[in-house]
Image (cartoon, rainbow, N blue to C red; front, top):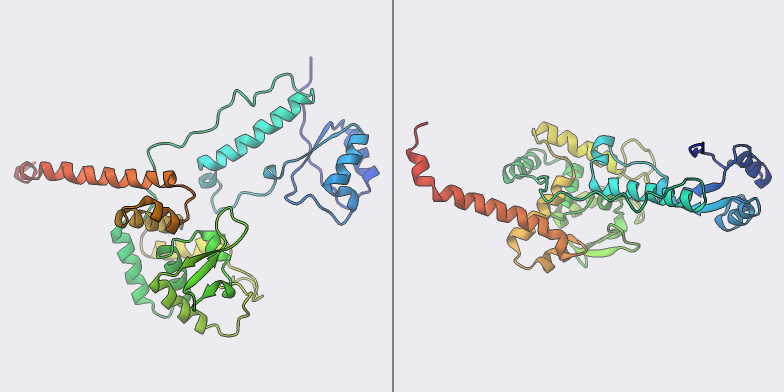
Length: 318
């Protein structure tokens, strides 16, 4: 009976290539999957090109699969794993691994073609802030005029629609008051793109920058209070903690993404041209905005349905 394949993990440390391969052969390793995001090392034999050569000479297959490595970012693993996109990324990695094991004769059957990816539900979970919740946030800002840092963070999320990572990656040199724009490193991009600053964002950013005149241009705009270094930037986790604290104070049960969801929904309501909305929200396609449009249509139908029977409803006593 053929034994089930085993998966082992190993770090290269400062071993010689001979020691490394000897360890692999001890447990009969047939495939090495390199999960490093950048397969380089100060020990040249562990650079991907040389490692491929050495392993091939030893009869071992080398594959670079960085998507398998790393760690899940987020405060709640359950919430992260509930994401259809995250599930599909993990599934693609598992399917690739199955294929590699099959073509190298380690397993008898390749399941990669029979397992389908998860489908996003057409019923979209409402994540945005209600108008009443947005009013509560504005009142909180008015009650706390000295908390400029928190106000600036909220404005960037609420009025500019920035993603968490985009806020955390901002540096002083990214704020251009002359051209009235922010230079933002967007999702999936290698270079920064200029965004027109909304007037409330511009005003509060100017106040925030003037309160921190000693920062260098390459310093992060928002630093972590836990790190002493000027260049210790605020993390997405740190941002989530700040917003969560404010939301708990206001009895709002949402996460940070609620700001961007509300930002997009507001633009879809106000601007008839979805292409223009996509440019402002930096969605890659108009199709990605359709889910927001569907939400609004459902709300409109509900309002019309209730209005149609409003006369009879007012007469009801039970």
